[in-house]
Every structure is written in structure tokens, then in C-alpha cells.
Image 1 (tube, rainbow, N blue to C red):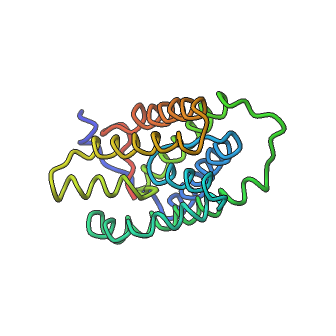
Image 2 (image 1 turned 45 degrees about the vertical axis):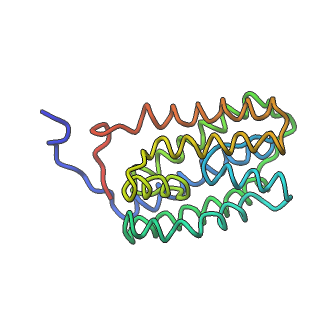
Length: 205
């Protein structure tokens, strides 16, 4: 039987709430790894890291502010339910990323380990959120909007913007930290690519 023909088992509200909390906590922990090791990733989180390193303002503040303009596109493209879930997820990541640094401390943190583990944690957190019809907003929403409105390939738009973010990172980070950030981005995207496929997970919210 084709997996697409199997009946779906919708997520219950409490399952969505648990997923929201667990997913955003995973992402916030990955953000803490990156902040401690002076690394960054792509999308709006990458912009928030850049602004944090350049200005001294905390990641959580920048991450929340940067995402504000994208909610309009989210409503137009994805609807109110998705947009509200995404708003809550972004608010929780912003909050938890501030609190996690107070809950844990690192005496030693190898940058290579931080890159791979931080990227993996963020990828796992995003995967949990994706499976409950939630995202972390930003560039992904913009890419989908441009694809639907102007026919631009969303993947290429995302890749191009992430590339620009990595290039801009050379202005505020040493080259070796940028290289490790790219490695972490690969780990993050592999987590999602290998586990977020049509037909592999049928739960819906």
C-alpha cells in the first residue's frame, strides 16, 4: 500500500504544545552552542547572529525583531494557523535562547564539536516543529512567497541568501569560524533532508 493512502493520525493539541516546547528548546540549545563558540547559521537566525556579534545586542532580541516583517507574507502564503504557530515558536526560541545561557555554562567547548552538535540540535528542533506545521519563519517564508508570486525557485533563493550571510560573516568573525559555521549548516540541513520526506511521517495537526 502506498504510504500516502494510509489514514492520517492528527496531532492532538497537547502533542502540538509539547512539540513546540521541545523543538524550541532544542533550537535554543543549539543557538547557545553557537553563541559560545562564535559561530552562526543561515536564514534569519544567521542574520540575528551577525547583528549580535556586530552590535552586542543579544541573539533573542534580534531574532524576534528580524522576523516581524515576514509574518505578513506568512499569512498570505500559509494562513493564520501556520502564522500563529510560527509566531509562538519564534517568541519561544527568542526567550529560551536568552535563558539557556543562564541555565548552563561551558568551561570548555571545542569549536568543531559546537559546530556539528549545535547544527544538529537546531536541525532536530526544526524537524520537530516542521512535523507540527510550524516553522521559524523568515527567509524560508520569503523564498516560498517569491516562488509562488514570481516563479523563483525557493531552494535557490534560500541558498543565495544564506551564501550572502556567510560572506557577510567574514566581516565580524575569523575565517576559521566561518568555515566551521558552514560545516554546522551542512549538519543542520542533512538532519532535515534525511528525515523530512513526503510519506515518511504522516501525522498532521
